[in-house]
Length: 290
Image (cartoon, rainbow, N blue to C red; front, side, top):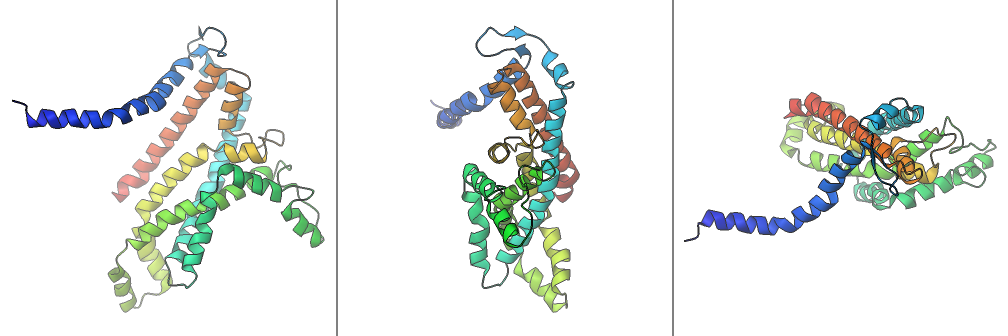
């Protein structure tokens, strides 16, 4: 006589098996193999040569690695707070009683559904020095054209601007959902007590969406540390390497110079950095909220 519990277990395994196979092949195996080859010197074409921690030791002597890491951190520090604030302000507008809220919601979110290549190409064209839209406007006003993507002091800011325009809509959706979950009775009680808009905003809305703020913060930091596409399309890491981020250096090391072991080692150091920062953020902010 079959035991019902065993049958349920068997059916559960059978239903989940296709997903587990795909997940193992496409996620678990690449992660494990990447860690494995980080201890080898390997150019794909020749036999792997075990070098132990040599790749990691070399990394911490590599000036390009540290400059690329700093550019990545710089990108995170610029974009993360701005995207949180802008996303929240957008959410306030689309959840308000304004007659423009539906139009605003579509306008704010449409950029996010565009592909990275489309957005990056569009902004690279608008920021082109000779015939770009921005410089055409400046020229018509009598100003000198600006090297948005060719000036070492402006290039990273230009990429950040394009990224903010592109991805702010995602945070808007999360904040909007959080604001809509707040009970209307709370706002009605505050209004009956004579609270003005500023008091309602900072004493009710902001505290009650803090869990979502923590979520957006963690997701945004992870996404910003993994920046690559828009930088590669808009500047190629230039000028003079001032916008080369760590993912781009990993890509170039592995697929341009065929140093697969060294490339994998840098990838895992980046993974460890993201993991530590995410855990610290959760412990410092998320646990307090829960």
